[in-house]
Image 1 (cartoon, rainbow, N blue to C red):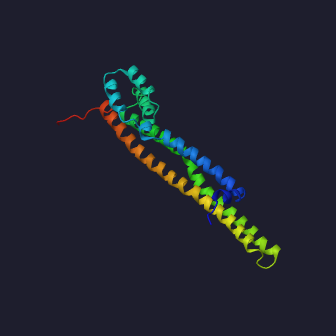
Image 2 (tube, rainbow, N blue to C red):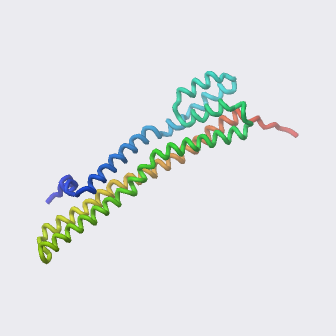
Image 3 (cartoon, helix red, strand yellow):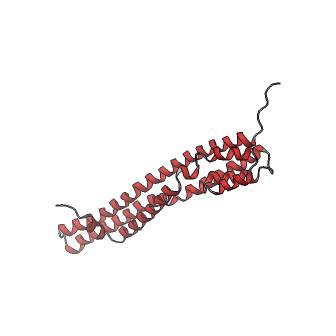
Length: 212
């Protein structure tokens, strides 16, 4: 006999509705992060190549216009560098740019934090639903005498286990996506460091002098 999973879920009680709400939250967060937290949207690969000639030529109005067209963490960091280029020495400017980029990347990662919440809460809600279902199943035994109706007992146990399965089914992909975005954060951070170093070496830091 085939199992009707929709019927089983509908009979799972309040815990199933909570898990369903958590699944919708996880889907919404994942879709938003997949769209907004792409490496190309955080660290556009050709932006520094376009910014360096403008910076070296002193065409900062054009540089500002270029950076305004790119709504990315790298573009915002480069705008900070350009705006404060005359206020700080090279090392201090580099440090401020690094701090700004780090804060922006942490803010981006924080937007994926609901996935960790879902991965933690969903199995607990499922476990609570399982406990409630088992209590109901044992109530069948208590009120029907002896082992009671085996079909009713099996139905209560099935309802209990459906909650556990639903909670785990939502928690596992949420946890996987949370680690996926953490890995993406590391990759974006490394790419950001490389791009900032290229611009700083080309435009901010004084060239090394040779000879004695």
